[in-house]
Length: 297
Image (cartoon, rainbow, N blue to C red):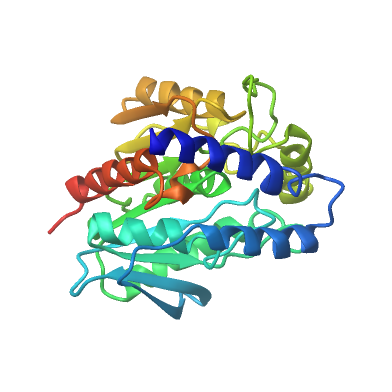
Protein backbone atom coordinates (compact mmCIF):
# COMPACT_ATOMS: atom_id res chain seq x y z
CA UNK A 1 0.00 0.00 0.00
CA UNK A 2 2.76 2.44 0.91
CA UNK A 3 4.62 1.61 -2.29
CA UNK A 4 1.46 2.30 -4.32
CA UNK A 5 1.13 5.72 -2.69
CA UNK A 6 4.82 6.45 -3.23
CA UNK A 7 4.58 5.41 -6.88
CA UNK A 8 1.66 7.78 -7.40
CA UNK A 9 3.48 10.62 -5.65
CA UNK A 10 6.63 10.14 -7.72
CA UNK A 11 4.61 10.04 -10.93
CA UNK A 12 2.99 13.36 -10.01
CA UNK A 13 6.36 14.86 -9.13
CA UNK A 14 7.80 13.92 -12.50
CA UNK A 15 4.72 15.22 -14.28
CA UNK A 16 4.64 18.56 -12.45
CA UNK A 17 8.33 19.34 -12.00
CA UNK A 18 10.33 17.56 -14.70
CA UNK A 19 8.03 17.31 -17.72
CA UNK A 20 7.34 21.09 -17.94
CA UNK A 21 11.10 21.74 -18.05
CA UNK A 22 11.61 19.29 -20.90
CA UNK A 23 9.97 21.71 -23.29
CA UNK A 24 11.51 23.05 -26.50
CA UNK A 25 10.57 26.58 -25.43
CA UNK A 26 12.85 26.39 -22.37
CA UNK A 27 16.46 27.37 -23.21
CA UNK A 28 18.87 24.44 -23.00
CA UNK A 29 21.16 26.09 -20.38
CA UNK A 30 18.13 26.62 -18.11
CA UNK A 31 17.00 23.03 -18.66
CA UNK A 32 20.43 21.84 -17.55
CA UNK A 33 20.34 23.87 -14.35
CA UNK A 34 16.80 22.90 -13.37
CA UNK A 35 17.25 19.20 -14.16
CA UNK A 36 20.48 19.17 -12.16
CA UNK A 37 18.49 20.36 -9.15
CA UNK A 38 15.59 17.98 -9.80
CA UNK A 39 17.89 14.95 -9.90
CA UNK A 40 18.99 15.62 -6.32
CA UNK A 41 15.95 13.58 -5.30
CA UNK A 42 17.62 10.53 -6.93
CA UNK A 43 19.87 9.41 -4.12
CA UNK A 44 22.67 6.82 -4.16
CA UNK A 45 22.90 4.15 -1.46
CA UNK A 46 24.77 5.01 1.69
CA UNK A 47 28.34 3.85 1.26
CA UNK A 48 28.66 4.70 -2.43
CA UNK A 49 31.86 6.56 -3.23
CA UNK A 50 32.37 9.04 -6.05
CA UNK A 51 35.67 10.15 -7.54
CA UNK A 52 36.26 12.70 -10.28
CA UNK A 53 38.63 11.26 -12.86
CA UNK A 54 39.73 11.70 -16.45
CA UNK A 55 39.55 8.64 -18.67
CA UNK A 56 40.65 8.69 -22.28
CA UNK A 57 40.93 12.46 -22.03
CA UNK A 58 37.26 12.81 -21.03
CA UNK A 59 36.16 14.02 -17.57
CA UNK A 60 34.18 11.36 -15.73
CA UNK A 61 32.96 10.15 -12.36
CA UNK A 62 34.07 6.79 -10.97
CA UNK A 63 31.50 5.26 -8.63
CA UNK A 64 32.22 2.34 -6.31
CA UNK A 65 30.47 0.55 -3.49
CA UNK A 66 32.60 -1.49 -1.11
CA UNK A 67 36.17 -2.55 -1.64
CA UNK A 68 37.92 -4.26 -4.56
CA UNK A 69 35.44 -3.68 -7.41
CA UNK A 70 35.30 -6.44 -10.01
CA UNK A 71 35.42 -5.16 -13.54
CA UNK A 72 33.88 -1.94 -14.78
CA UNK A 73 30.69 -0.58 -16.28
CA UNK A 74 30.98 2.26 -18.77
CA UNK A 75 27.73 4.09 -18.01
CA UNK A 76 26.42 6.61 -20.56
CA UNK A 77 23.91 9.01 -19.03
CA UNK A 78 20.71 10.15 -20.67
CA UNK A 79 19.31 13.58 -21.35
CA UNK A 80 18.53 13.72 -25.05
CA UNK A 81 22.22 14.40 -25.81
CA UNK A 82 21.65 18.00 -24.63
CA UNK A 83 21.33 17.81 -20.82
CA UNK A 84 22.44 15.53 -17.98
CA UNK A 85 25.82 14.64 -16.52
CA UNK A 86 27.60 12.16 -14.35
CA UNK A 87 26.40 14.20 -11.35
CA UNK A 88 22.70 14.01 -12.23
CA UNK A 89 22.95 10.22 -12.47
CA UNK A 90 24.65 9.47 -9.17
CA UNK A 91 21.50 7.76 -7.91
CA UNK A 92 21.52 5.21 -10.71
CA UNK A 93 25.29 4.73 -10.79
CA UNK A 94 25.50 4.39 -7.03
CA UNK A 95 22.90 1.64 -6.96
CA UNK A 96 24.41 -0.01 -10.02
CA UNK A 97 27.80 -0.06 -8.28
CA UNK A 98 26.11 -1.79 -5.36
CA UNK A 99 24.28 -4.41 -7.43
CA UNK A 100 27.20 -5.21 -9.75
CA UNK A 101 30.21 -4.89 -7.47
CA UNK A 102 31.86 -3.04 -10.38
CA UNK A 103 33.42 0.36 -10.73
CA UNK A 104 30.94 2.50 -12.67
CA UNK A 105 32.65 5.00 -14.95
CA UNK A 106 30.31 7.76 -16.17
CA UNK A 107 31.84 10.16 -18.68
CA UNK A 108 30.72 13.75 -19.04
CA UNK A 109 30.61 13.41 -22.79
CA UNK A 110 30.19 16.57 -24.81
CA UNK A 111 26.62 17.75 -25.31
CA UNK A 112 24.71 19.30 -28.19
CA UNK A 113 24.01 21.88 -29.46
CA UNK A 114 27.54 23.04 -28.66
CA UNK A 115 28.95 19.68 -29.74
CA UNK A 116 26.66 17.74 -32.12
CA UNK A 117 27.19 14.21 -33.44
CA UNK A 118 29.63 12.50 -33.38
CA UNK A 119 31.07 14.23 -30.29
CA UNK A 120 29.18 12.09 -27.75
CA UNK A 121 30.05 8.87 -29.58
CA UNK A 122 33.69 9.90 -29.96
CA UNK A 123 33.90 10.60 -26.21
CA UNK A 124 32.27 7.28 -25.36
CA UNK A 125 34.80 5.48 -27.54
CA UNK A 126 37.66 7.45 -25.99
CA UNK A 127 36.50 6.34 -22.53
CA UNK A 128 36.27 2.73 -23.71
CA UNK A 129 39.83 2.93 -24.98
CA UNK A 130 40.88 4.60 -21.74
CA UNK A 131 39.54 1.68 -19.72
CA UNK A 132 41.51 -0.72 -21.91
CA UNK A 133 44.65 1.38 -21.49
CA UNK A 134 44.10 1.21 -17.72
CA UNK A 135 44.54 -2.55 -17.93
CA UNK A 136 41.00 -3.89 -18.21
CA UNK A 137 40.13 -6.45 -20.87
CA UNK A 138 37.02 -5.99 -23.04
CA UNK A 139 35.25 -8.92 -21.38
CA UNK A 140 35.79 -7.23 -18.01
CA UNK A 141 33.82 -4.17 -19.11
CA UNK A 142 30.07 -3.83 -19.56
CA UNK A 143 28.39 -0.88 -21.25
CA UNK A 144 25.10 0.54 -19.99
CA UNK A 145 23.04 3.68 -20.33
CA UNK A 146 19.63 5.27 -20.10
CA UNK A 147 17.51 7.06 -22.70
CA UNK A 148 19.92 8.77 -25.12
CA UNK A 149 22.71 6.99 -23.26
CA UNK A 150 20.99 3.69 -23.98
CA UNK A 151 21.03 4.43 -27.68
CA UNK A 152 24.61 5.65 -27.40
CA UNK A 153 25.58 2.36 -25.73
CA UNK A 154 24.27 0.41 -28.72
CA UNK A 155 25.91 2.82 -31.17
CA UNK A 156 29.26 2.42 -29.39
CA UNK A 157 29.05 -1.38 -29.65
CA UNK A 158 28.17 -1.08 -33.35
CA UNK A 159 31.14 1.20 -34.00
CA UNK A 160 33.55 -1.12 -32.16
CA UNK A 161 32.20 -4.11 -34.08
CA UNK A 162 32.55 -2.32 -37.41
CA UNK A 163 36.18 -1.58 -36.53
CA UNK A 164 36.63 -5.30 -35.85
CA UNK A 165 37.54 -4.59 -32.23
CA UNK A 166 36.63 -6.69 -29.22
CA UNK A 167 33.25 -5.85 -27.74
CA UNK A 168 32.07 -5.29 -24.17
CA UNK A 169 30.84 -8.22 -22.09
CA UNK A 170 27.22 -7.02 -22.23
CA UNK A 171 24.90 -4.11 -22.97
CA UNK A 172 22.18 -2.75 -20.69
CA UNK A 173 19.72 -0.11 -21.89
CA UNK A 174 17.15 1.65 -19.72
CA UNK A 175 14.38 3.23 -21.84
CA UNK A 176 16.70 3.45 -24.86
CA UNK A 177 16.21 6.16 -27.48
CA UNK A 178 17.16 4.37 -30.66
CA UNK A 179 15.04 6.07 -33.35
CA UNK A 180 15.55 9.83 -33.46
CA UNK A 181 13.24 10.17 -36.47
CA UNK A 182 10.40 9.57 -33.98
CA UNK A 183 8.31 8.04 -36.73
CA UNK A 184 7.05 5.23 -34.49
CA UNK A 185 6.72 6.83 -31.07
CA UNK A 186 4.35 5.14 -28.65
CA UNK A 187 1.32 7.11 -27.43
CA UNK A 188 0.61 6.10 -23.82
CA UNK A 189 -2.47 7.38 -22.02
CA UNK A 190 -0.10 8.84 -19.42
CA UNK A 191 3.43 10.14 -20.10
CA UNK A 192 4.78 11.71 -16.90
CA UNK A 193 8.22 12.72 -18.19
CA UNK A 194 8.78 13.22 -21.91
CA UNK A 195 7.25 15.49 -24.52
CA UNK A 196 7.64 14.49 -28.17
CA UNK A 197 8.23 18.12 -29.14
CA UNK A 198 11.23 18.25 -26.79
CA UNK A 199 12.78 14.99 -27.98
CA UNK A 200 12.24 16.12 -31.57
CA UNK A 201 14.20 19.32 -30.97
CA UNK A 202 16.90 17.43 -29.08
CA UNK A 203 17.23 15.03 -32.01
CA UNK A 204 17.79 17.88 -34.45
CA UNK A 205 20.31 19.57 -32.16
CA UNK A 206 22.28 16.35 -31.74
CA UNK A 207 22.22 15.19 -35.35
CA UNK A 208 23.29 18.55 -36.75
CA UNK A 209 23.84 18.10 -40.48
CA UNK A 210 23.67 14.30 -40.34
CA UNK A 211 20.47 12.46 -41.31
CA UNK A 212 18.51 11.14 -38.36
CA UNK A 213 18.57 7.71 -40.01
CA UNK A 214 22.35 7.43 -39.61
CA UNK A 215 22.65 4.11 -37.71
CA UNK A 216 25.14 5.61 -35.27
CA UNK A 217 22.50 8.22 -34.40
CA UNK A 218 19.46 5.95 -34.63
CA UNK A 219 20.74 2.38 -34.14
CA UNK A 220 17.42 0.83 -35.17
CA UNK A 221 18.40 1.58 -38.78
CA UNK A 222 21.67 -0.33 -38.47
CA UNK A 223 22.90 -3.90 -38.40
CA UNK A 224 22.75 -5.25 -34.84
CA UNK A 225 24.36 -8.60 -35.57
CA UNK A 226 27.28 -9.65 -33.44
CA UNK A 227 26.45 -7.40 -30.51
CA UNK A 228 26.91 -8.56 -26.89
CA UNK A 229 24.06 -9.90 -24.72
CA UNK A 230 21.49 -7.15 -24.32
CA UNK A 231 19.10 -6.32 -21.47
CA UNK A 232 16.43 -3.70 -22.13
CA UNK A 233 14.16 -2.24 -19.45
CA UNK A 234 11.33 0.19 -20.21
CA UNK A 235 8.18 1.54 -18.59
CA UNK A 236 4.75 1.19 -20.13
CA UNK A 237 4.01 4.89 -19.52
CA UNK A 238 6.51 6.40 -21.92
CA UNK A 239 6.72 7.40 -25.54
CA UNK A 240 9.88 5.32 -26.00
CA UNK A 241 8.13 1.99 -25.33
CA UNK A 242 8.09 1.24 -29.07
CA UNK A 243 11.80 2.07 -29.32
CA UNK A 244 12.57 -0.55 -26.68
CA UNK A 245 10.35 -3.18 -28.23
CA UNK A 246 11.68 -2.57 -31.74
CA UNK A 247 15.26 -2.75 -30.49
CA UNK A 248 14.52 -6.07 -28.80
CA UNK A 249 12.87 -7.45 -31.93
CA UNK A 250 15.68 -6.31 -34.23
CA UNK A 251 18.40 -7.61 -31.92
CA UNK A 252 16.72 -10.99 -31.54
CA UNK A 253 16.24 -11.18 -35.29
CA UNK A 254 20.00 -10.69 -35.63
CA UNK A 255 20.68 -13.51 -33.16
CA UNK A 256 21.71 -11.23 -30.30
CA UNK A 257 20.95 -12.69 -26.87
CA UNK A 258 18.21 -10.27 -25.81
CA UNK A 259 15.94 -9.80 -22.84
CA UNK A 260 13.18 -7.17 -22.76
CA UNK A 261 11.47 -6.19 -19.50
CA UNK A 262 8.40 -3.93 -19.60
CA UNK A 263 7.40 -2.47 -16.25
CA UNK A 264 3.69 -1.73 -16.22
CA UNK A 265 2.56 1.70 -15.01
CA UNK A 266 6.11 3.02 -14.69
CA UNK A 267 7.69 5.88 -16.58
CA UNK A 268 10.81 6.92 -18.45
CA UNK A 269 14.01 5.83 -16.65
CA UNK A 270 12.11 4.99 -13.47
CA UNK A 271 15.36 3.45 -12.21
CA UNK A 272 16.33 6.91 -10.93
CA UNK A 273 14.03 6.12 -7.99
CA UNK A 274 16.00 3.05 -6.95
CA UNK A 275 16.32 2.88 -3.19
CA UNK A 276 12.89 4.50 -2.83
CA UNK A 277 10.58 2.62 -5.16
CA UNK A 278 10.78 -1.14 -4.71
CA UNK A 279 10.21 -1.93 -8.38
CA UNK A 280 12.99 0.46 -9.41
CA UNK A 281 15.33 -1.15 -6.90
CA UNK A 282 14.43 -4.60 -8.19
CA UNK A 283 15.01 -3.48 -11.79
CA UNK A 284 18.56 -2.38 -10.98
CA UNK A 285 19.16 -5.64 -9.14
CA UNK A 286 18.12 -7.48 -12.30
CA UNK A 287 20.42 -5.27 -14.35
CA UNK A 288 23.23 -6.00 -11.92
CA UNK A 289 22.73 -9.74 -12.30
CA UNK A 290 22.79 -9.42 -16.08
CA UNK A 291 26.05 -7.50 -15.95
CA UNK A 292 27.71 -9.82 -13.44
CA UNK A 293 26.64 -12.95 -15.33
CA UNK A 294 28.50 -11.92 -18.47
CA UNK A 295 31.64 -10.38 -16.98
CA UNK A 296 34.84 -12.38 -17.13
CA UNK A 297 36.63 -13.11 -13.87
